[in-house]
Amino acid sequence: MSIWEYANPKKFMQTSAWALPGLIVLTVVCMAVGLVWGFFFTPDDYKQGSTVKIIYLHVPAAMMAINAWAMMLVTSLIWVVRRHHVSALAAKAAAPIGLTFTLIALATGALWGQPMWGTWWAWDPRLTSFLVLCLFYLGYIALWKAIENPDTAADLTAVLCVVGSVFALLSRYAVNFWNQGLHQGASLSLDKEENVSDVFWQPLVICIAGFVLLFVTLVLVRTRTEIRARRLAALLSRERLA
Amino acid sequence: MIALLLRDLRLSFRAGGGFGLGLAFFLLVAVLVPLGVGPEGGTLAKIAPGILWVGALLACLLSLDRIFALDFEDGSLDLLATAPLPLEGAVAVKAAAHWLVTGLPLTLASPVLGLLLFLPERGYLWLVVSLAIGTPALSIIGAFGAALTVGLKRGGLLLGLLVLPLYVPTLIFGAEVVKRGAAGMEIGTPLAMLAAITAGATALLPFAAAAALRINLR
Image 1 (cartoon, helix red, strand yellow):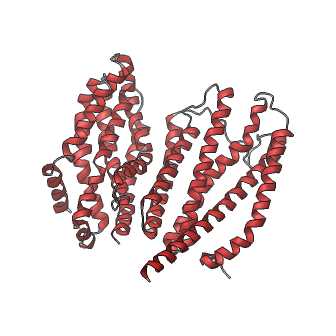
Image 2 (cartoon, rainbow over the protein chains, first blue to last red):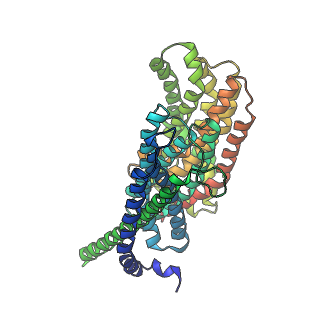
Image 3 (spheres, each protein chain N blue to C red):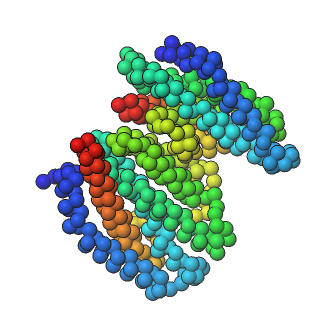
């Protein structure tokens, strides 16, 4: 029994069909508890007032936007090395989700920034690198769309993902150099003294768990769709030949 | 390799289009910006480093799809792939040829355009230096993008979408060098970073580009 067994599409379909209902329930529960707790049962911040509550959407979405790219990188590498189709399809399935998380993070940030910083947008390193990340997602998705042969598309997007990761990191540090930040620093680190207060931290952790589960669930659903689409295409082409 | 370089250079000179086009585009950007922004010297001098770098970057983008597309269409790319010269070497040579016909003329022409945009006097040297160091990175990154999109019918627009995010670090450090140079500040750090990007991209990206080409030729 090794993890590579799940690279078999049939096995993957079976396992994911078994796991999905539970995952969906867990996701809904986590998101509902985290968000309701965060929105209605936490005090207002002494400086930010009730706008602080956007943290429950903004932070998890931003974390998952980056993690989704990391997951795409790993699955792309698995595809390049071991040629498991499910892996390539999972990367393809994750990209639009990651893009959506990026947009959520940018939009909620803008909504919060308007009353707090007095501006929708600032050319802050974090904001800028998220915008760049958004462009990387767009390019990746566009490349998948543009190429007809699925294997070629998987190969080329995998190469793009690897090179893009390097340049995304480079851009992250380049924009740090280019402009000073307005965005607050990390306040959830496990190894730091000064963190966000427990009152906000507890619902936030549940929200983060909810977003992780949401991402996993959506990726599984979309990967299953991709596998079915692939099967359908194979059946259709077989019919045309017959 | 030298034969391939000469062949590419000859093709781009004689087949027309590619050579002058980038330069003309660069000139147009430098002419259009003052028309849009207004003729005040102070404003123009302030934005000149950024405009010149963005202009160079877009001019470079304009001719990227030519790096591989023509050879792909007439089949000579297949011959290159099966030639004794490693495909990585061929990619590097083609990127070098692209730089010689776009990046180098842009670099040499940039002081004249800096004049149009009232670039402060101290900035000229650093404008030329930063473009000379930075534009090779633009060519090699562009060659990677061109290798990704070579098989596509309408690759041009997609190529821009893929390549421009990859240009972000080069642009930031390149424009920063000119900005600091023009203001008479220390330029060591951004210049070193710019050179590092060029060196790293030149060393590693030919492998990625060759891998993409092999996939497209399969």
